[in-house]
Amino acid sequence: MFRIEKNQSKAISTPKSIDPNFIAEEREQRISTRILARIKQLSALPSSELPEYLQIRTTILLRGLRLINLQAAVRYEVINSLKMGSIIEFAINPHAYRRIKRHTLREARIIEKLEKQRRMEQESRRKLRHTSFLQNVIQGSKDFVGFHKNNHNIISKNRKSIATFHANNEKERQKKKERNEKLRLSKLMAEDEEGYRKLLDEKKDKRLVYILKQTDEYVKNLTGLVQQHQQIEKKRKKEERDAERKFVESKTF
Image 1: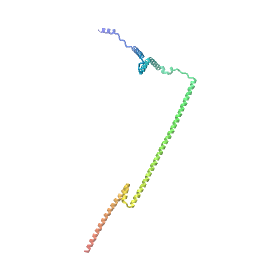
Image 2: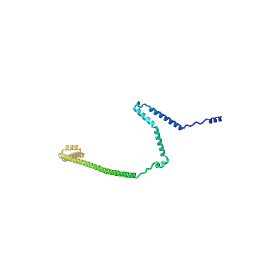
Image 3: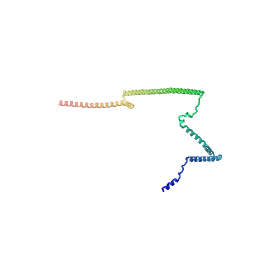
Image 4: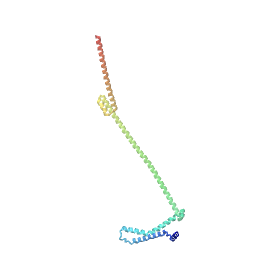
């Protein structure tokens, strides 16, 4: 039984593998057939009966399909050029495939003249930039000095104005103080105690009000002491008179 199965397996042939090149050729053939059919279909359309936007789209599509072969050829040429540019010989010596141009004496003189003119233009531009830079620096320094000078003048004016304001206020305060002193002296000279107290209350002179209050308390205390002393003296004199009267009465008996 084992031998029969072995003979049967030898009789069966191995299947052929799929050829990718054949499949690619069939695919390209199908695409080409469809492109040709599409070109015929678009060429057969009555362009006069279509709307304007459909005519434009149809024309663009038709021309694009007709240029497919040209696009493929250009792509193939570009790919080959890239392959040529990536080989080892070209990578080592990129000038090997470049045509050497021979320069004449006239071209050399023209190039030298142009180079000299270019250097002169560069030098003139450099000098112009340097001059512009120096002018900007000078103008910046002038603006800086002018700005701070102007600020200094403004600050000086403000300082003088503030000093004048405070001086005038001090003079006015001193004059007011002198007037108040004269008025208080006049009230004192006129012995107008009520007016003097009222004046102190109006001017809110705490120092004088405090002194006046202390003076009133001192006078009040002094008055109490005087009255107490007078009462003590009166009592003492009364006791002395009573003692003298008793002494005289005792002598007469």
